[in-house]
Length: 97
Image (cartoon, rainbow, N blue to C red):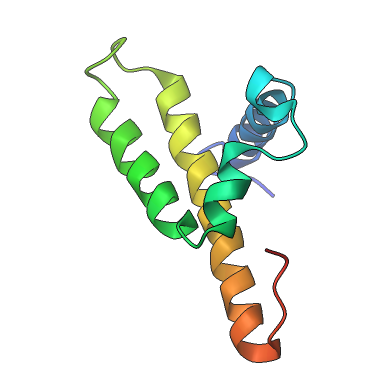
């Protein structure tokens, strides 16, 4: 596929960024704080709040920081997972959380 906006390369960069977050200090415990927040029923709001935070921060803290954009996308992916899990729960009564 010939992507007009380099989506293939950007998706690989996003994947590398996400992979790196799993090696950082806050991912070393059995459960990340994000797991606990999602399990308590606040995952959608938590993700939306972080998306807004990093979107507002972009261009203001550390300039136009590429990492802020990667964080927005990562929280969006987590939110998609929560959305899909919620849909599965409503359809089947089962949830991974």
